Image (cartoon, rainbow, N blue to C red; front, side, top):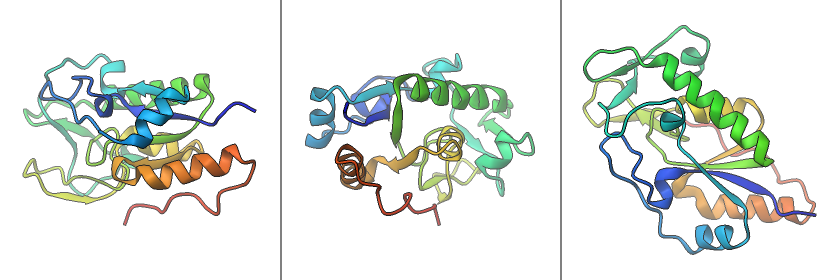
Length: 178
């Protein structure tokens, strides 16, 4: 049986895809091992949706969540006020298509991102404060049944993958953001 596949935020590989033109390289032995094992698919939902690098920062509007964005009841706004919701939804759908095409059942995503936040996102006020919740792509992937982990949870994601490789069913989905 082929090893379980994992979709990983491209910025965690050092790809300069973030809003500020930077990256968030994750220097982890687990990630290097996954790469050597051929498990990983690097992906940036925002770039897949055609957003420029660099670009103005964006956040889910205050009091809303990613599920509401996906349902068309809330927006993702750039700091300059532009509504980027359509691009974030398109990026989330592209992430799901890429994960499905690769056979990925797990995602390791950069926390606090309006796309990839897995445990928290920024509060929508552009102050740097975070609130519990998921980004738009993380929400779409989780809703489709992928096990979604934050970059800080790489060891837990590795245990999950190893359980899948061993033919066992992991005990439960990763915890919901609180």
